[in-house]
Image (cartoon, rainbow, N blue to C red):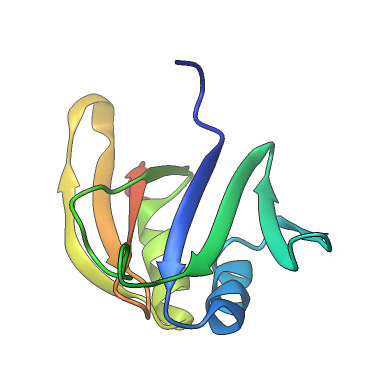
Length: 118
């Protein structure tokens, strides 16, 4: 295995989910793939793919949380709350003076944050 390349986020409505995630990750570059009628959010070579939830994979918490490196956990919490996310777990201190927390998006999925508290 090599480096991770993509994260699929399952949502009940792709257009609403794509709009929200573009706000949540303002540095992401949207790339439309006309042959698939699909837009990928590129974050420095990592693909954030907002896809339709279905009977095999629903939206919501399922046990896996990807943690994003942030400069300030507190600022990231405040920003995500301002666009509709809620604090789900934490924040808690971990090694190296870092903190982590989990935010719940409006569709029930979790976004992990990891960095300095301030």
